[in-house]
Image (cartoon, rainbow, N blue to C red; front, side, top):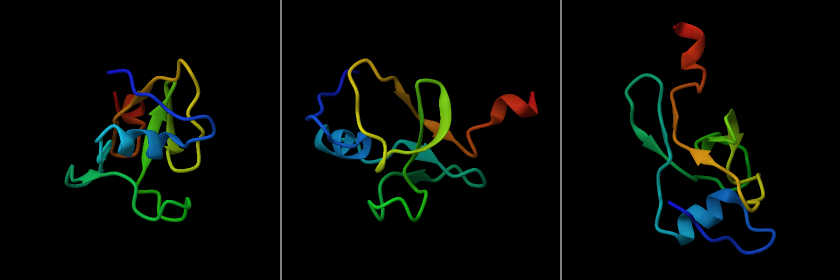
Length: 81
């Protein structure tokens, strides 16, 4: 689903503005997570951005054409295959 972002707005802020509050699950229990601290200290807002996992969505500026996907666990499930 395309999400609009203002210039300079973080991915987390753009997702919140679009009503998306959770975009990651914890690796042990699959619990939903989204932005918590908003300053990059807690890592709850991790997301995969353009295929790269473990991006703190509260720190990454949204750019036109970015693909942001849900991150499950540590974002490296492909290593366990």
